[in-house]
Amino acid sequence: MPTTEWNRKIWGEKHTWDHNGDEWEWMAAHCRQPYAAWKGSLVDTLLAPGATGCDVLEIGPGRGRWTEHLLEHARTVWIVDINQNCLDHCRERFGDRRGLRTHHTSDCGMEPVPDASLGFVWSFDVFVHLDEDVITGYLDEIARILEPGGSAVIHHAGKPDWTLRLAPLTRRAGRPGKVVQRWVSQRRWRDDGNRSDVSPRAFADWARAAGLRVTRQRDSWGDRGQYDVTKYRDCITLLEKPA
Ligand SMILES: C[S@@+](CC[C@H](N)C(=O)[O-])C[C@H]1O[C@@H](n2cnc3c(N)ncnc32)[C@H](O)[C@@H]1O
Image (cartoon, rainbow, N blue to C red; front, top):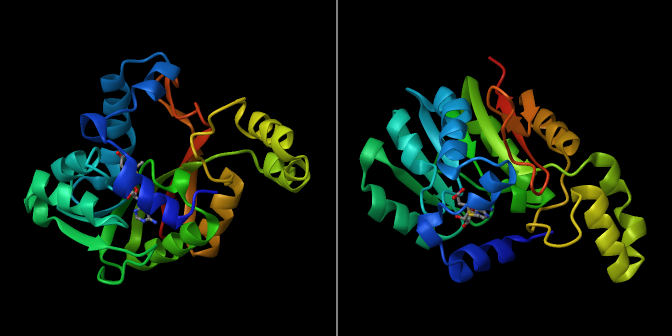
């Protein structure tokens, strides 16, 4: 499982942020779509409907790949990251458009954000690398800061639940066991995309335990389901805070 320390180092020190982080051509290619169409459809289908006219918060903005679009649609925007240099970069790129506010968190705390103050929370390509403690911490925080009726869209790892239950067995088999585990849980022999061991079912259970309603879980969108996040078997969960 990628740890908080891993996340701090990779995104804060090692990652090169090619094209300002707009580097998901490989996911678009996986579903045989141009990257601009893949990204635009994600914005139109999942980001804009939640963000429009709301006070919003983004967890893990990186270089602002999605912040740019939140700033187009939202009333005000908070961004929260464990890497100060990501927040600094966004501040430099976007100035104080839409009253952009930043919070440097140590793991999942969002203390400066008032209770029940936001209409929408967005996070993409962040929770896929978080472990259970940080995810459940964030879900508690999301439940706290959303206003009743507010919603969230969170992209996370989506390994089938039953495959994760095999992990204690495959772990005992050393390296071959690791390869088998990757194959059953992600249908990949190599390169697991550093996805955490999280299933859609576990994520939904944790969200409900935090007091949130799970309105939908999906891994594709578009009129023919032509856009997806299946290369590493990811999932996108839509949440709502009950009114
Ligand atoms: C792979 S980058 C994705 C950036 C952006 N969301 C995108 O899709 O282009 C992961 C981002 O999440 C941040 N991050 C990692 N762990 C985090 C945590 N526990 N809390 C907040 N941000 C975190 C990293 O610093 C980085 O900005």
